[in-house]
Length: 287
Image (cartoon, rainbow, N blue to C red):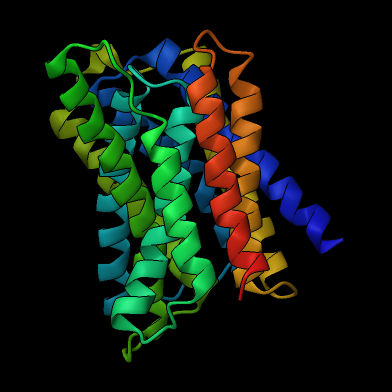
């Protein structure tokens, strides 16, 4: 049952990427559109996390500070995501997003938390490097290529920072809330800061409307539901098995969904996904 729930979570995250891509089609790639998407994600997450926290409110200074850090990382990830989707198709974008979300927390754990660098992790990094080599495209203008890779790397880093920040939060010896309370505080901070940024920096005429709103709230709901299912399965499945399966599953689903968009994945990108999937899967197979 829990492997089925994990597969369902991967499906939800894969559809979320598609929903985000559709949002950019209607809302564009402006700074206002990016912040608006972050606000919608916070708004839809707020009642969900409040209910999961038994309608209680708890907060400490450390929790509040980490929530602000999370918002900053999420905002930067959103900006890089919208910009990268201008030049990358859905499968290529998902590679950078999912690999960053998996490998940055692993690297921080090894370097700063005395976690073991196993053979499986070494083989995984080699296969991921090979997969990223396949994403290199010739024939692009030099300036455009450089600009695009900046956003790809930004997606990799800032999406990965979510797991890094959570690792720091759970291991820090300071007064803090539990995971549900932390997620609730993060949702509140996201709504408040994103709304302030829209009032100060946003351009009202660029505020998304209509179908863009549907995809913005849909993206947030899918993300929250996927994370909730992930929290349930974490109680019953080892993280070393869960995260490789989740990451590989999202990549495969995103690639399949990309065939139904205007930006079809190329043969090289399909090969890249194959190596990436093999890399994340091998962590669960090789001790």
